Structure formats: C-alpha cells, structure tokens
Image (cartoon, rainbow, N blue to C red):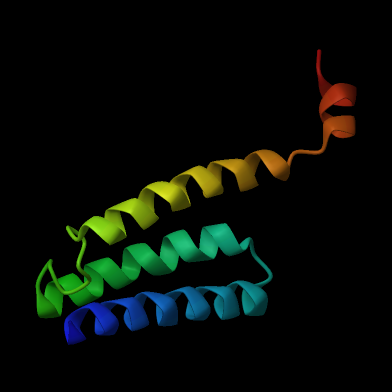
Length: 89
C-alpha cells in the first residue's frame, strides 16, 4: 500500500513541477505536462526500472485515458472561432 502512495505523490509532484515550468517559460501547461512526463518516464525508467512509475497499474491507465480526453478538449477549447471563420477559405 505504501508504494501506491509513493507513486501517487511522485505523479502529483511531477504535475506541480510541470505547471511551475509552464508558468516560468510562459508556455502551455499541457505542453509542459507532456514534456515533463515523457522526460520523467525516461529518466526514472532508466534508473529504477520501467515499473517505478507504476505504468501498468489500472488506476494510472484510467487516469492516462481520462487525461488524454481532457487534453483533446483543452486543445479544442484554445481555438478562436472568430479567427477560424475569418481565415477559412
């Protein structure tokens, strides 16, 4: 049970770190989360093994799927309909 809390805390730390990096670099939070998550998986996976972040745990798979749906929604929400109509040919 302790490992579940450690993995959850690690993921939450990475999410918070990604938001701070996004604010510091003035980039999209979604882009920062994708980059930080990918780099973290590569770095932690190289040192501690591929299961260190619990990638095969069912609750992480659920959160990953939900995150993909939310990320798609956020990408669509950033489109400006007025500009889209003006530039459409």
